[in-house]
Length: 100
Image (cartoon, rainbow, N blue to C red):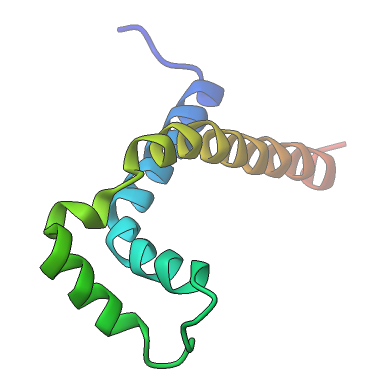
């Protein structure tokens, strides 16, 4: 059976984990971004009314507006992060625990 190199597994795992994370977080991020982008909004107490307004005026699909570009950005960013952490961990493990 062919095996996948560890580096590719780390890269793909990080990319897909980042995409999944953003898919879950997006409905909570959209109202936050709307509140932050308006100059006339008080920060405290504006979040839940903004969620209700989005659902009422634009429907539940609006909570995923901008998801496409976010996922395109999330894959390489998180893939590189996972790969970097795992390769760094491997490097320092070999450096510190190498048998002499």
